[in-house]
Length: 372
Image (cartoon, rainbow, N blue to C red; front, side, top):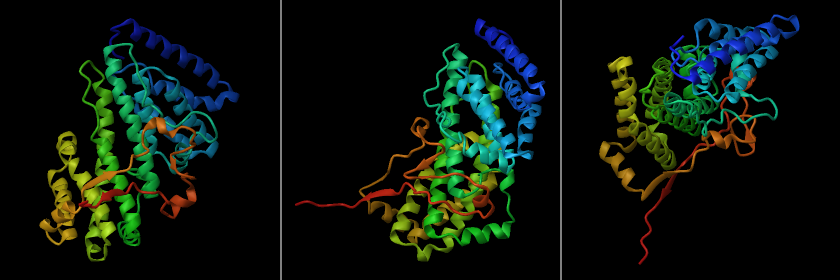
C-alpha cells in the first residue's frame, strides 16, 4: 500500500476496509454467495493509486466465465456498479482495467454479458466523458485517464461488434488458413467497414494521456501495456485486410477507392504518435513491414504514387460524419448501437463469425463546382 499523503488518502483506506469487511460478512452467508464477486471487485479496486488490480483478484473475477450466465452476469454487474458509483479516479481506472481484462482474457460467456450490460433499463454504458475527481492534483490528472480510457474501451467494444469477434481476445483465436478464407470471402463493403473501425480504434489509442507527474505511474503503465497489446492485434487485423485489398485493387469501384484512401490517410496520420508510444515495446522490423504494406496499397490503388496523389486532388474536401463514440451519447441504449438496429453480441453470431450490419462513417466527398 502506498504512503498516506493526505486526508483523502486516509478516507479512501478507511472506505476500503469498511466495504471489504461488510462484503466479507455478507458473502460468508450461503444466501449471499453471489456477493463474493462484489468482494473480489472491492479488493481489486482499492483507493491506492500505486497498485493496479492484483492477478489473484482478476483471476477470481474471470472464473465467473466457467459458470452459468447468471454467474457471469453477477460478476459483470459487480464491476459496472463499482465503476458507476465511485467518485475516485483510481477506483474508476481499476474498474476499467477489469473491463479490459474481461475483453482480453475472459471466456465468451463473460464477454457476452459485458457486451449486453445493462440487460434492461439502468445506467447508460460507460458514460465517463464528464468524470472529474478534484480531491487532489493526482486524482485530477488521473481523471483525464478515466475519461480517455472509458472512451477507448467503448471504441474497442464497438470495433468488436463490427469485426464479429472480440479484438485482441485470447478466446477469438482461429486457424490461420480458416481466418484468411474468412477474410477473402468478405465483400468490399464489409472489408471497408472493418478497416474503418480498426483505424478508428488506433486513432483513439493515440489520444492516450501523458504519464501523471504526481504519481499513479503503475496504473498508467498497466493501461499502456494493455492498449499496446490491442495495437498489435489491430495491426495484425489490418495487415490481413490490406493484403486482401491489394489483391482486389483491379476490382475496386471508385467509391470503394475513395473510402480506402480516406482510411489510409487517417491511419498514416496516426503513425508518428503510435510509434512514439509503443515502438520501443515491439519489433521494429514488424512495424516497418506493416507501414510498407500501407504505402504499397496506396501505390496500387492509384497505379503509382502519383496516381494516388491525383485521387486526393480530385476532391475539394474529405470529411467524415460525426462519430457516435462519445460516452455521453450512449444514453437510452442498452448496448452500443446505431439507428434502429441495436447490436448485441450473441453466442450464435460469434460461433459463426458473422458480420454485423453496422453502417460505416463514409467519407464525404465534394466535387469542384465552378460557378461563372
